[in-house]
Image (cartoon, rainbow over all chains, first blue to last red; front, side, top):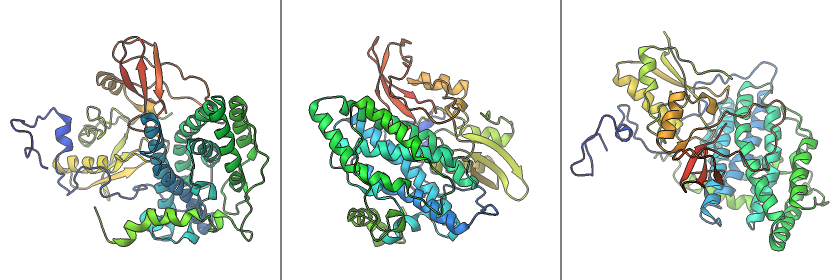
Length: 295
Length: 169
């Protein structure tokens, strides 16, 4: 719709009304609408790989952290319209959006080095090429699992990003520094709900403890040594935060052993749980059916 | 914290008037999204903007709008570049930005947290935000996230007004 082509009879566009500017057709062929014509989120950023860094390792590491965010974001998006209250809808949708933004930046960082776009990496890789941890692909069975899983994931990712903000790749360091502020809000949101459930009714306490027991084995994978990592993460920082939340919530830290690798391989090696195929089918089907589509 | 660049030039003034798609009474200058406008012989006019949040869906639209405005104003070669570091902070919202936020009923952000060392966990009640309608600080947080990631939801106990606040970041 161009300026003056209005559906409101008697309405004259007003230079002082900023909404009129938004509805203008841009001279360069862009039409104002969310979600149209995404461009490279790293446009204008110096993306040369510093001397001394192995580009292959940097690509693998950015894919790992980007895939964690992409798959976790998709799982959170599946909650939208199923949550108990409108306030939780907006919270979970916004957290999913933050993670999707982090995924775009990280996939663009990896893709820029290997000559692929973020969309090619998100929509046209096979399951075995996705490097996300298995915690990211878990389907939450109830609200308690949603908030407990988010506590484990965001506590780990926040500690990791704080450390990566000073890493040897300036682009990854900038992406991490930006993510820290977002992840701090995610962790506070999850922690507040874990306390509320754990310290709530007998039923909410039981569900929170059950969620913790179910998810704890998936946390071990977060701390496996990674030869591509650009920082070393101390599990102690993670445990200190999680223990503070669990103590406040009156929940017991599980003693369960970590989920075993399959033939020595885990999510980072492209070995996923059964859930992963269904996620990718939903995530990728439209792009694969219409590979040349633009909208 | 790095203060916003305010090097005035004709191109800067055109770019600075670009409205934010989500809160169009505010410009990208008011919000601290516009970082600089420079000229180089090989790239033409270079406008540097920074995203508020990693997933901000408005960046693409802001970039297109900046391009179109400068083009209409007669600037022929325009490049819009993204700057990720230092990350955007609500401290970059100008005094004029604070005034405009309050005028549309959105509480402006308090000072962003200064951190030395790990980000502390916040389990307690956050400090109260003043009601943009009546000014009372007798308000409560109803949700940590609102219609956009950058805002939280509150309610005023004094006048009953439900309102949004820009979260300090």
